[in-house]
Image 1 (tube, rainbow, N blue to C red):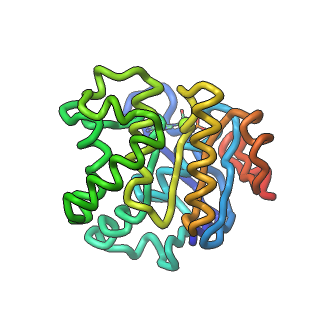
Image 2: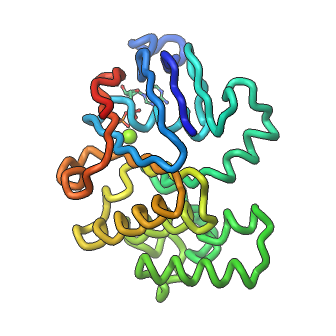
Image 3: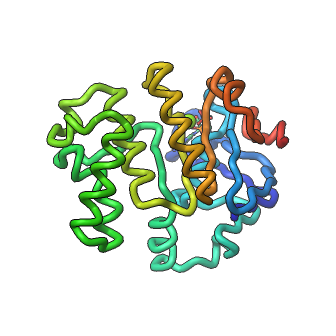
Length: 226
Ligand SMILES: Nc1ncnc2c1ncn2[C@@H]1O[C@H](COP(=O)(O)OP(=O)(O)O)[C@@H](O)[C@H]1O
Ligand SMILES: [Mg+2]
């Protein structure tokens, strides 16, 4: 499903900046089979978000090779990349909800892009909003929601279209323990239904509660895979 082979990612700063480059990932290699689950751990700045951006094609490696869904990522056309992204549910670390849309329409977005019927959309969006405990907030815009509520909307949007691959970047960062537990139940259920899952976290208590294979990053290097 996902294969990294000696992947490097170097961010190039604008000319004149004091540091010329940031080596976010250094020679990272791993494989995640279809239907697999991986924790992605490491301290802040280790490269977790960068690795996830490569997976959902928001960045391209400076060196090395990435295969996604059995295809060499560098050879995927712009058009096919857009199609492929629709099969990937992403929970962004900074949520990225659309500010002008209410909670319902934010969550409905991936299904509308996939041209599902409004009846199907209504059924799925209502169900997932109930699951994340926000059925009463469906008319609220993001700026009317707390950080934790926005995070739960972002999670609902990522999973509503039953993605083949779910990439969640610190998805429990703004949640209390009960909500985090509920989120993990949701993610585990999706994984059992066949969705491949990668969850980045620096919360080792959460990892201990839900034992699963783990990729560990430190200063851009993969230091643990097991
Ligand atoms: N867009 C960017 N431009 C320049 N440097 C970046 C950018 N994004 C991240 N970095 C740097 O890359 C390194 C890894 O960052 P990141 O992937 O966000 O780590 P993590 O998610 O583990 O906290 C850090 O040193 C960070 O400062
Ligand atoms: Mg991050």
